[in-house]
Image 1 (cartoon, helix red, strand yellow):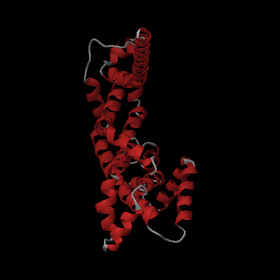
Image 2 (cartoon, one colour):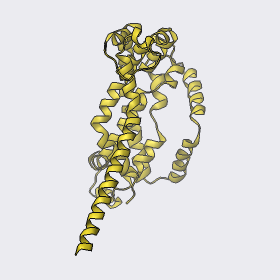
Image 3 (cartoon, rainbow, N blue to C red):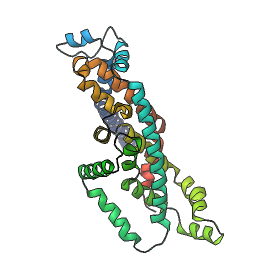
Image 4 (cartoon, helix red, strand yellow):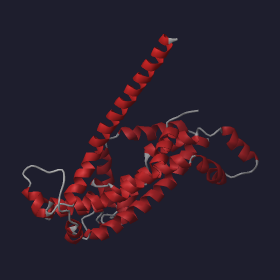
Length: 288
């Protein structure tokens, strides 16, 4: 009886130690991950003079200020860039969802000659370096005279092979017998897609939407290439414009304030929908 109790005590002790080590590791990792965000926010509330007076950077400030945020909006028309980014993100995401849902449905349920070959060709496009795609897109958009326009910004981003593949795998988890039964009842493909497949696969669609929003909001290389008119600049262009004007190099706290403002919508979006993102990714990566 005593030996049995000792074994139970040892097991409990081992469990407590493992749990403590696990939480300690997670705490340390969270500090590593969150520290850049803390440093960004801290720098954004330091005054210009106090920041430049620090030979050794301090992890705190005794005199926080919001002056840097005012400077960030007055150095460049950041509000207009926010509006441009919002228009670009909403339109691009909406068109991408339309193309992705229809393409995934076609590859998952429709029967047509050469479907497997076409899909294999689609997947092979993922192996092409992004730099080559950017070059060809730039030449195409320039030839179509779409530089410095929302159409030129949006069109190259309305299709994503990865999102089509992810949603196709999710659609294929729905039993095909359900589709055949719907066809026997006279249900059209569009109605079946809208009433059955999309509601079932909503977590994955929400995940794709959020990931695309983040991708568009953080877009930098393509907007820099295709626009040189400030009327079509995005928030990423605004940060670069601050640096090119010399403002960012002289006033790093103001530049960090602009980065905080730009990052805040994405952080809020992720905190609200992070469970949906995890659920959608897990569903998309599971067969059967």
